[in-house]
Length: 461
Ligand code: ARG
Image 1 (cartoon, protein in one colour):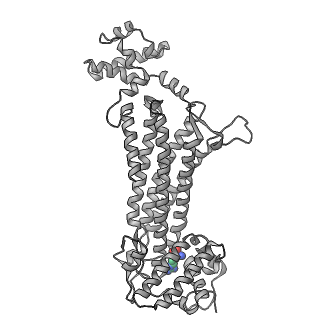
Image 2 (tube, protein in one colour):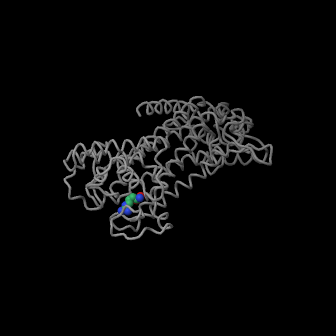
């Protein structure tokens, strides 16, 4: 007798190192709740279709529920000999309910079983991640609301470009997160299809009812083709793509916080609850949270790549390679969830914008140069001509250590007779921002509207 669950055709046990190499129990135990739920639905379907008796199904269901309790109480800890979570559960079930336990696997394969488990798992995780995204969005909205008229330099090429409402800057991330949430909703539609009843690859000789199990498990539909049902991992790749995009968004925001917290920018102050120190340099306060999020983004993008490469050479249908999908998925889920949590805390209570420094920053640069050109263009000077004139005056200002606001009216009029005293008002930072009142722009009126729309969107979801 061997320690294996496979058929009698095997005479000797696996080499211990091969057993370890083959086993997935070390990580797929994470699927156990979903494996039990899937098995319960399968047992109920077997009775519903008359493949087993109601009594047998009841025994199976109560045995499976007992395993759930044992697992939750920390009493069910299968080892390597179980190979994977599916065998571990079946084995324990047979210990608990005896011979009836051996009927559970009728008309089923681990191939459709594991496909069902991952989908149930992912469905749940998608909903949790969506809820976390909403929490982060709420924090960003609250912060934006308090900072509509706080100005911050806006950049292109990391060079000062035009000043912005800080709320506008934060709302850009609200929008990215909104798409992330919706993207997960799209992925969900393709995750929520049942492969159960595909069998090993070809379907089954038993009169099963796949729609019945799909309904019990609250799937929106069933895979139309059994081969596709057991070997498709598109849904997991899609999830990892959506997860990678979330991480990329968090990483961009992280990069900004890291810059903002530097001495050079000094736009934010990190609070002690979300910053770390140095073991040697007593003055240091480091932005470890955004740095870690930025770093972990590589992990999640790597998992997406891993799964794409995993799939590219696989012939139909199931191949053991597919066992490698799990660690990538689980780690991506954990990483996205931990990163969203940390960033939400960081923005809720871990940083403070240094508003005096921000006000000073936008007042002491040439980010109002476009507004001088716009001023002239409004007075009928063709924009390109105005643009060239302003370029000239910026050059003189730089050479003489002046800012545009320091020029006298005579100097302005020397440049072009169209200038009048209202130029000073037109280039003041607050006005520069207010004036960008085109739809979706940073003008305060637009930002207030955008905030209201964002709040509405949050209420709808
Ligand atoms: N542990 C396996 C996996 O994760 C379960 C399916 C095994 N199926 C098989 N035919 N060997 O993919």
